[in-house]
Image (cartoon, rainbow, N blue to C red):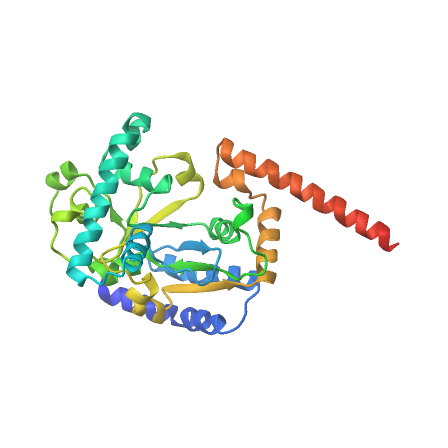
Amino acid sequence: MGKASRRKAVRRAGGVVEEAAAAAEKEMSWAEIVETAGKLEEEWRTNSSLAWYRGHRNESYELVCTLHREMDKVLKTNELSPTPEKRRTLTREQYKAEYRDFRSSAWPLLDQRERNDWGIVFAMQHYGQITRMLDWTESLACAAYFALEIHCEKCQDPNQNAAIWMLDPQALNRESEGRYSLLALDHPSEIAADEANMFDARPWHPKYGEAIETVLKTIAMAPDFTNPRMTAQRAAFTMSGDSFESLDKEFPKLVQAGELRKFILTPGVKKEAEAFLRAAGLDSYSFYPDLHGLGIRQKAKGRRRQEIIDKLRADKVKK
């Protein structure tokens, strides 16, 4: 789509963006969140884009990758204040060291699909290692599941506000790389074969990034689905650049345009969202299609049965 067409599409979407911005000023029910997100997603799709979502169990959590969170913690703990250039170098060196260590230890355990440059990085993310990646999903329901922390009972706080972020990923790439499209993680051989049309994502990779002098910005990538969980969760990823700022602060224009927005889930709304997931038949096994997810589902069923029994006993006592 050309620039003129995109400008027209943005003008057409203006009503929805303004409506969404106004809705953000008041507390929204789960039904209103679903309706607002649905309208925005429909408008973005008419503009040849799509919607990504990310759930946070605490509304104060920022859109910062684990690599930057870890490095920021190390620097603050040691009371270090390096220059931006030195911090960028330290971060890239640490990322490369983490990558090499994980690769050498995990290689015998990796699936054949994961035994490549980007497959290893996705495996690192999948198993909780520090990376530049930030998890998103194309499913609002999946984001709600993670915002509610249904898979982690000890993490749940019924009195704490949660949040769901919504992003137009192609708008992010328009701001960071001047391309209104998703960027593919092409391998070096593919880039060499079609250099004019391929996007070189290697600067964001720990194996190659250390030698890159360019200051990187955050980008939205079309992922390789290397495991069943990614498929079940309709996974998507942003690849953080060199800024340690939260995504909404790195790209304030996206927030102003309504292309990156935040829905707050109050305790009451969290209950509504949980009821929605139950009614839709979505649980831990839906998003973790393995024995781990099945085990969480069975425990949740047991807790649910006990809640029903406790309620029946309480009602009996009242009578």
